[in-house]
Length: 154
Image 1 (cartoon, one colour):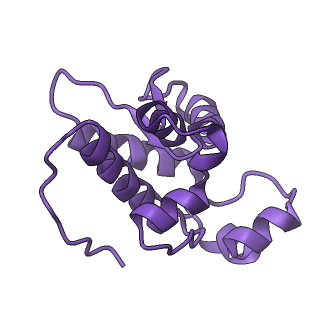
Image 2 (tube, rainbow, N blue to C red):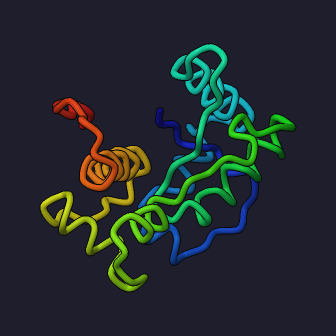
């Protein structure tokens, strides 16, 4: 799932804009309103989750991403479909690998699990990379047999 949001304020963080490289004026003109985007996101989640199951928010640095997801869902829809369920990939890796915190950085995990390519800071590409890393961690440390798939999202 990927959508670019129409800004809901005029404050711009130049450092953040330099990282994500999205143009404020284009987003203001063509972005999807947060309320519609979050309804679409929730519908996408509902399509993926089997009946009777609940979604789990999984991210690398989940505490950072969770702030925005939780805030926007509550602000625009009045609830968060993830509830209070979030899993941080870095913390999972720390516990599974028994390495120290410094050995669980994104750059080290990208080097180990993704042949070293780093973040693009495109939300969709970064989410796919995080999923690939987590799948490989689960295969390595939890012994899960994960079928090999070819990522066709470009």
